[in-house]
Length: 242
Image (tube, rainbow, N blue to C red):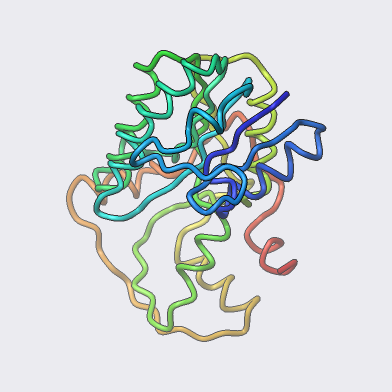
């Protein structure tokens, strides 16, 4: 199939592109900086041309700025309109595990993005992924680490990409698919693992999380007991292979 990947140069997107190409699909990498298919979700520029002839679109775009809704919500609506005009038959939206439960800005924006997809004109599947090993490691790279007692189930971006590729090859489900790592670990345990494997030091101290945010996170909002796809690489193994 001809498949377009929005955000195909990002942390996850580049793995999705590589996985789809390895499976024999013709992949178009779409981003603002793309030489062949430059697009801008905030304006809709380049979308009609980039999506022409595509059967599936994987939206792996991301934006964690204060204006993220312009990209993730308004941009999704523009993208879906362009997909409908281009005859795209399956929209795969990459979302985040727990976005319907965690009451902070980015997660709320992702939940709104999901709403735009489910209300849109193109058949869809939403893939909710746990935190990537790559992002956890980056967060732990600070010399000072405030660490709340929160369970995570981190997963390698490459493992998520394989799940997304499988979803993209199938008919639209009009439902959600969860992807999480092989192990659940407290943030503090992950920090100890990071220090042990990398040999780096950091000043750590506990941080309480009050209110609904704390309750949701402590109760496992960022984990899944029975994910549809379970990644293979543990955080320790992923760190050791870097």
